Every structure is written in C-alpha cells, then in structure tokens.
Amino acid sequence: MEIKEITNKEVWEGFLVQCHQKTFLDSWYWGDFNEKEGNRIWRFGIYEDNNLSALFLLIKVEAKRGVFLFIPHGPVIKPSVSDKQRLEILEALVIKVKELAKEDNADFIRIAPIMERNERNNNMFRDLKFKEAPLHIHPETTWELDITKNEDDILKGMRKTTRYLIKQAEKNQDIEITKSQNIEDLKIFNEIYRETAKRHKFVPYSLGYLENEFNSFKEQNHIIIFLGKYKEKIVSSAVVIFWQNTAFYHQGASLEKYNKIPVSYLLQWNAIKEAKNRGCGIYNFWGIAPDMEKKDMVRSRHPWAGLSLFKMGFGGYKKEYVKTQDFPVSSKYYLIYIFEKLRKLKRHL
Image (cartoon, rainbow, N blue to C red; front, side, top):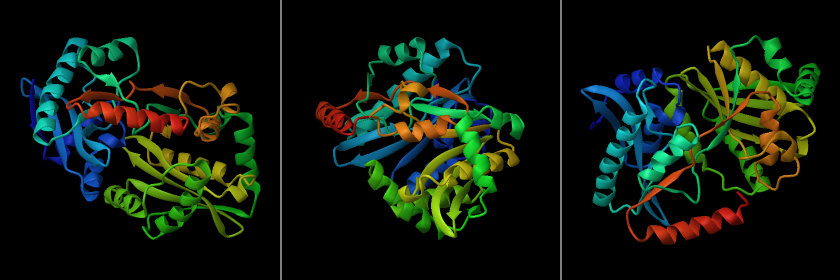
C-alpha cells in the first residue's frame, strides 16, 4: 500500500462516484471549507499497485483542549476490496497519520468511520489499538429516505401525522416555502438558528462558519437555503446540501412560537421534492438520537429526541456507522478523554 496526496479535484470526486458509503464530508468541497476555516488539510489517496483503493480527508484541529488530526467520515474504500485489503488500508493509514501527528505535535488521531457498525468492522479498529472516542463530531447514527419512488409512494411511507400535517400546510394559504442561493439569506437563517440553539441548549456555529460552508458548496450549485414563511414572517429554515446523488439536511432551525404551524413539515417535503428533481436517490436527514425506536423517543431525555421523531416521521431507515475512534499519540490524550467524557455526560448525549 502506498499513500500519496491527491491534488486533482476530478480524480478525487471521480473515485467517490464509484463508492456507496460516503457523505458530503468526503467531498472535495468539504476540504475547501476547512481551508476557509483556517485549518490545515491533506487529501490522501491509498494506492495498491498504482490503483486507487481508498481516500481520506485529514484535518488538523487546534482546539483549546488539545491538537488532533481528524478524518471525517472516512476512509472511503472502493466497494470491491476484500476484508483483508480493508485491514491493510487501515494499517497503512494509521502508520502515515501517526507520523504526521508526531511531526505536528498532535495529541491524538480521531476517525469518524464511514463503515457500517458491525462486529467485523468494530474489531478491525480494536485490533489496531483504537479506542472508542468520548465524543463524536459528526453523526454516528443517521436517518435516510429512499426517494427513487414516486411522490405518492413516499407520502404513503410517512407516519400518518406527518403526512396529514404536510397536506394541511399545502392547503394553508398563509404558509409559503421559498428557496434561495443568496448568501445574505444566511443571516435570516442564523437569527432563527441561534434561537433554536438556545432552546435546545447546544453551541451554534458562527455566521462565518455557515458562510464558509455555503460558499464552498455554492460554486457547483450544491447548496440551497429553504425558507418557510407564515403570514409573511420567516419562521423555519434549512440548509440542504446536494452532492453525488444524495441530499443532506445539514442545518435546520425554527421559531418555537410557531411550532403548532406545520411550516417545517412542508419545508422538508419541498426539500425532498427538490432532491428528486435533481436526480438524487437518497434524502439524508443527518443525525438522529442513537439506540432508540419511535416508541421511546417521546420519553427520551436525549436533546435530539424531538428532532429525531420529526425526521423519522417522513419514513425511511436508520443507518449506523462504527463509533468515532481515537488513537492516542501523547499522554495528554488521557486528560482530554476525561474532559470530553464529562462534557458528554453534562449534555446528556
């Protein structure tokens, strides 16, 4: 196995077209976004006999708690490789990234794998001396909807209440859904987003972060801001990324005062229809609360419980990735581990 940097966008994106297990975090554009954020990045390809077998984006994260090298939803591995080759790819990755971590004085390596959560894949990381991370950065459990069906069949697959609220919203002349690719509309989204963050007790991304993400994906028409109005007032909004046959509901916000008005339901339905019009086969609702079925959601203390119930109401299926993994490089990692573990407990995650 040989690891080389990839500097050609077409090579990177062309390889990803062949792969099924991937998200927009693997895209060339997510690397661009991280560079806009001031992070050092590497785009690596793993080759066997000069054939590209896998790739991964590596990001240097300089946080207050410590420095680490991070691989978001990676590595992406060609579907045809064997289990033996998969292990060899991970072994080569660890050797390479460990060298870089020591050169850059990083305390640990963190990987959010894009592999199905099962015993075989869990064991691969265990055998390579990884340990389960105390916190995750990107979703480990997501909710996806097959949108290759016609609209009537998609609606039939929804929870009865969700379907009813969409129909009610369609009849309500006071509700209007618009879409925008004007970066100025991110300021409107941000106002609602900050209220949502306060309500659900999470730390929101800055407006600068949202603008950098928007600009990174806008170039190729990969991103849309959906705005939901009630009586001319914007009360709900979402940022959706469209990339390689999948739409990702990445950021969402709504005003609590209008929760009983089904604007967000119609907004999501419009986003799903936009994804279908763009030729997408999957609508990815992004993260949901882990290890819970529908009947448990209402009683759950998990901060994502209500949002998860909302997402699951549109029909679809749960997808679970191997939990985020850490590879310690310095002894400082163990202090960071304790700090992050306490933060997780505090947030009821």
